[in-house]
Image 1 (cartoon, rainbow over the protein chains, first blue to last red):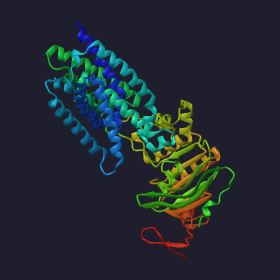
Image 2 (cartoon, one colour; image 1 turned 60 degrees about the horizontal axis):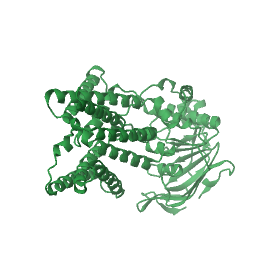
Image 3 (cartoon, rainbow over the protein chains, first blue to last red; image 1 turned 180 degrees about the vertical axis):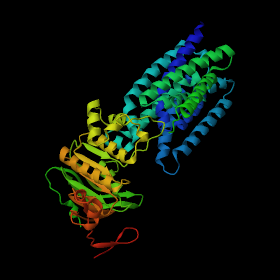
Image 4 (spheres, rainbow over the protein chains, first blue to last red; image 1 turned 120 degrees about the vertical axis):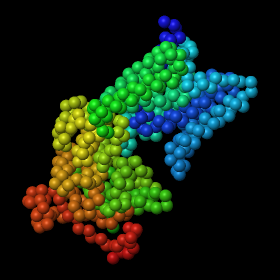
Length: 266
Length: 255
C-alpha cells in the first residue's frame, strides 16, 4: 500500500476520534452553527497566514480564538440572539477572508484544498501536529465532560453543584477553536461541521447513555473516514466530500432503522 | 412587617437581610429579609410574578442582589430541587446516570435513594420518558444524594393532583426528620401549604406577612376530600394583610 494512503487513513481516523466527544457536546448544546462559524472564520486565518508568512495552523487558531471572544463579548450586549450574531460573524469572516485572498498580489491559493480538504497530501509533520493537538483536546474533553454534561442538563443545578458554567463554556469554545485549526487541512473548513454533527447524530438512536453515544460516534466517524478514503482512491473523487457522503449515508440508514424498525419517537 | 425574621438563632443556615433584586429598572424583590434554621420548614407562597423563583435563585447564589446581603453558613451543602429539567432529545440519559452526574455514588446507594423517594423501578428508565410527578421525585433523589444541610424546592407540587401532593408533603416531612436539614419550599398555591410547615412567608415582591399555618384537622371541606388522616399534612394559611395591593402588586395603603 502507498504511504500516502496510510498517512491519510491515520489522519482521518484521528480526526474522527476527536470529532466524537466534541461532536456529541456540540449536538447536545445545539451549537452546530457555532462550529460552522469557526470553520468559516478559518478562511480569514488562511489569508492571514499567507499575508504574514506564518503557518496557517497558527493564524487560523488566532482568528478562531478572536471569534470566540468576539462572540462572548457581543453576547453581553443584549438585543441580538447568539444565532443572529453567529450568522453575522460566520459570513462576514468568510467574506473578509475571500476579499483578503483576492487582494494578495501574485498569489494563487488552491482554495478548494482549504474548503474541502486535501487529506491525501498530508505529511508526517502534519500528522504529528494532529497527534499532539489531539492529545491536548482529548485531555481537556475528559476533564470537562462531566461538568459540561451537568450544565447541559440543568445550568442552575450545575451551578449549585459548584461548577463554573461560563468558564466551562469558554474552555469548550477554545477547544473547538484548536480543533478547527488542526483539522482544516484534513477535511476542509466546509466539511468540518458535518464530521462533528453527523457521526454523533447517527449514534443517537442506539445509545442509552452519553458515553455510548460517544463510542458510537467514534465508530461511525472511523467507518465514514475509511469508506470515504477508499471511495476517493477507487473512483478518483475528492476525499473530503467522499468522507461526508459516507457519513451521511450511515446517518440515513441509522435514521430509517430507528424510525421504521425500532419505531423510536423522541 | 418583617416578622419573618423570627427564627431560632441556633443552627441558622441561611439569612437574607434586606435583599433587593432588580431586573432593569424594575425590582423583582424589595427589601426581603428571612432566616432559615436546621430542622425548620419554611414555605414561601405568592401569586405568579411575586418573585418566588427570584427569591430561591438569590438564596442559591445564582442571582446577585442589588442591595442587601445573603449569608449562608460556611461549607453548606445545598440540595436544590428545580421544577423540572428540559433535556435536549439528542442527549441519551437514564435516571441512574442523571443521579450520578450530581454525586459520584455506587449502585446500592442509587437503588436505596430511588426507593426512598418511591421510584425504584425507574433506575434504568430514560429521563425523556418519565412523567412530571416521577421527574419531581428523581430531582428530589438527586438533591438528597448530596446529604443536604439545606433543601430548596421550587413548587414541588405544581401540576401534581391533590393525592399526589399529599404524598410529596409526607415525603418532605420525613426527609426533614431523617436528614435533619432545613427546608425552603415555594408554592404558588395561596391556600394549601404543608401542615409540617413551621412558617409561611407570603411574598408579593415584598414580604406581605408571615406566621405559622393553622391546622385543618377540623375543617369540613378538607375532611370531606381527604377523610381523616391525610388532612393532617395540609394546613390552611389565613392571610392577615395589613395593607392592600394595586393591580401591579404595589402596596397602595397601610390599613
